[in-house]
Every structure is written in structure tokens, then in C-alpha cells.
Length: 75
Length: 283
Image 1 (cartoon, rainbow over the protein chains, first blue to last red):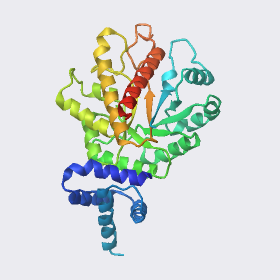
Image 2: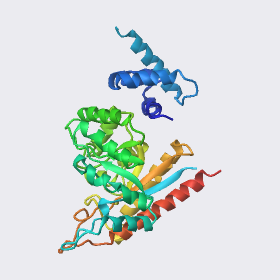
Image 3: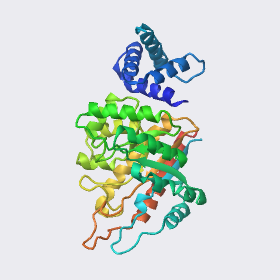
Image 4: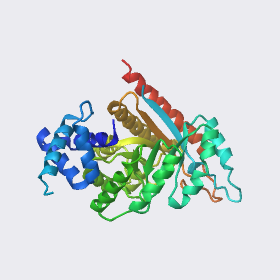
């Protein structure tokens, strides 16, 4: 498992008590959006589109949210 | 199959006997290798990088692995320390951060910047729980953990026992706090403190309850680690019994117990815990 995958799974696990899967996924995405560098975010979003990466269910959902946040930004 | 590797701190090899020179580096490496440790841990700040790189032939000669306790004093100082760790094929780096803001939120920013730097390196990079460091005390550390949910720790619990002046038996609340630290820890350090002194002799009868407490924590932390990691994972444990004046000394600045033997005792006790955990998880 690559380090960013491991880190996002860890964030998801540590936030998992904060609400439903969907709420936690959104919080994870907001955390990544706020604190991770652009390069790291782009890389994990790319990784998420590849089959067989070891993202947890919440992490995968969070990355979909993150992708949407990235797309919503004015270019 | 999961593996346990036990390292010995090179700093802890110092004897600091007044009027007596320290042993040579080759002698120290030889002693560590012959005692069956997996490797040696170095403790550099940036101005000690060259000194550490000069030890590379000794790691090779004695077939010892390298762990690094890195001491960055600015956000930028981590990268050269990680470059050094890479040159020495270090298996793991523990950051004892020298940036110590008053507010946990400010510490969280520095920690995030170190984690971003670490992302470019292959080895695991953990933050160590350590007095006079970024994660100086338990409550502050819990707050930083909350703000940086991707942060993983190397747990040196002796610092928190002194910091919080934990009474024994441990209260339920204190137990829960330490439990949160153990949940987030991917490596452990071997030293036994009591609630007043950072390092105590292992075999004095008055210290037995503290030795038992630390063994229980290490068992708990190692079991949690084993449960959340895959079969190919390696747990690293560092024996780190500091030289004088870490533990209390007598009127002639001499230590009260044999620190080298105590290190071997911790190594053996931790190997026993590991064996128990491995047997429990074997179907």
C-alpha cells in the first residue's frame, strides 16, 4: 500500500466516529482539501480511479468528494 | 509473517563516567551486534549529519540496520535529515520536533508540513512523543492527533508518565488517554519511568509496579499494531536507556544500575511479549 493510500485510510479510520459514512467521507475530503498540497491531492485522486488500490470504502467516497471540490474551483 | 526488530540507541551506549573516555564507535557497534540487536538508532540534528554518514561502513561491517531519531528545529530541517536517513538505508525515522508553539493548532501546521516532506521518502516517518519536543505532553499531543488524523506516532510513554505525574493504579481516564496514543503508534521505545523520574532502575523492588505497567502498555500497543497490520509488516522497537544524567546518579556521578544489562532485559521481555502475541494470533 502506498503512503498516501495508507494516510487517507488512517484519516478515515480516525474520523470514523464522527458520523455516518457519508458525513465522515465529507469531513475527510474537507481535511484533505484544507491541508494537503495540490500535488498530493491530484495524485490520490488519480490513484483512486485505478482498480485494486487499497482505499477503504470511506476513503474512496472521500476522494470522490475531493475530486468534485477540485472541479468546482475556478480555473 | 509479521516481524519484530529491536534496535539499540547509540546515544544510550555512552557511559559518561567522569575521567574515562567513551569506547570507540566500532567497539560500540560490535557490542550491539553481538547482543543480537537488529540495528542501531542515531539521533542527529542537521549539524550532525556528516558525523552520522561517517558511520555507514560500520552498519555494513556489523550487518546492523539503521533507525533515525531526527531532531529538526525548523520546518525546513527535516528534508536533509531524511536525505541522510535514506543514505544510511534507515528503516524508520522518528521526528523529535524542535518546533514548539504554544498552541496545538500551530504545531499541527508544522506537523503537516513535515508529513508532506516525508511523503517524498520511502521509509516510515513517525513523530515521537518526547518532552522538550513538539509533542511535549499528553494533552497537547492528543489535541494535535485530533487535528492531524494522518499522524502516526512512535510512543515513548515514559515522557507522559512524568508529564502527567500519573498515579498508580492508573485511573480509567488516564488509561483511555494512553489508549488513544497506543492506537496511533506504529513503533515503541523501551524505557521505564515512574511519575517523578524519567528513567528508573528496572529491578529495584519499589519500581516493580512501574515495570509491570510499562510491560502492560507495550503488550497493549504491540497487540493493537499486530491486529491492524498485514502479515508482511515489521514492528520496530527501540531500547533507549539514556546515559547520565538521564537517570538519577550517586554523589560521584555514577549510575545506580547496569544500564546495558537492563537494555538486554527489556529486549528479552519485549521478545517474550511478541512471542505471546504471535502465538495468540496463530490459528
